[in-house]
Length: 228
Image 1 (cartoon, rainbow, N blue to C red):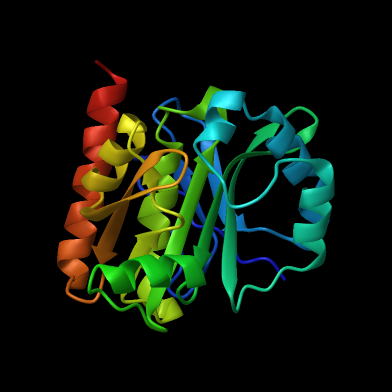
Image 2 (cartoon, rainbow, N blue to C red):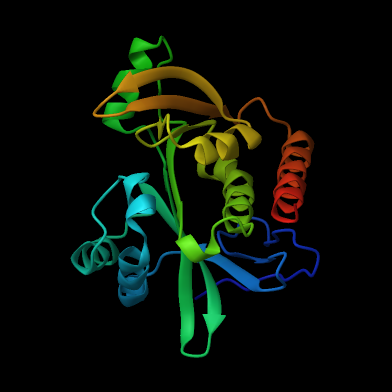
């Protein structure tokens, strides 16, 4: 059964304690629903993947972006290993996915290997984050609402730190600014066919009050940037 959603007019993300679902109001006034991906989302997820621009696809690489991949993901959802969250909005023909965030509940092998070389061993309390937002909803506060919600629920999933899934490309200045704003810090660099940064966020040292204040400030900063 789907969780009941709390709604607020002031732009903050709200949810009942322990809930993975939430709702938020964007600066545009549009309501955003944040919820786990469901098996019946295959068509919506496929539409989302196919709607991403080549530029956005080039900055995000956990898996291919096609209908077959969407079907496979929805057929094999395993939130005990990887939480797959979507942000949706309403349209005349129904729901539309406008953001897709992955958060693992444990380290990925290649991330763990890189961090070990940096002298930062990753363990069961360390997750990996891979966020994406569809092009026509970028810079509208969607990513900030989803990030605020995920950082709020992450400790309840047993996580104490979050790293970036496969790092972030050094050329992705907007992404690096976003992660820094939310408290991630750069701890290393590595090279594939591109230069990449490894960034990590320590959740274990954040008290709830400090976490809430950091989230609220990040949301306010996002809104200031949107209105420049």
